[in-house]
Amino acid sequence: MRIVVISDSHKRQGNIFDIIEKHMDNTDLFVFLGDVDDDFDSVLMLYPDIKYKRVVGNNDFYSPYKVEDEFTFNGKKVFITHGHKYMVKHGYATIISHAKNIGADICLFGHTHVQYSEYIDGLYVLNPGAARYGEYAMIDVTNQGIMMILCKL
Image (tube, rainbow, N blue to C red; front, side, top):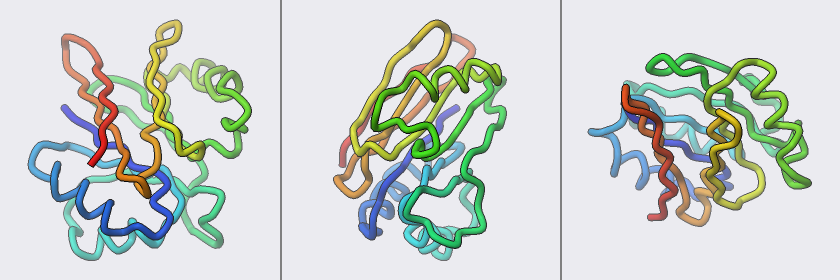
């Protein structure tokens, strides 16, 4: 099963549309990690039937969505947040510690505009980069394991 992860579009809606359209037929869930909320709203207007999860970023003022969330995907616990609450621009120790404390298998965040993928002590940690620059990520979760793939349009 596949998740496509998108973050930090910052008014580059076209890039989000390109990502969604490229992966619509082979993706089980799209995750939007915030900044800018309205961009993803535009996607949902055109594709109301896609399955998605989303959180808000530090630039998503007055948004009704959560700052963080967690859910189970193909038997794995996934923690999602934009990352600003965990000060990820100054390192990943805080967000990694939180994800481990809640028993997450996968930790997804954005905010830094820098792609990052690592497996740390049983935790898959991923930042898809900035959709503004055409960056995103895919995560395949199968019975054989988890594979994180950093992508660019």
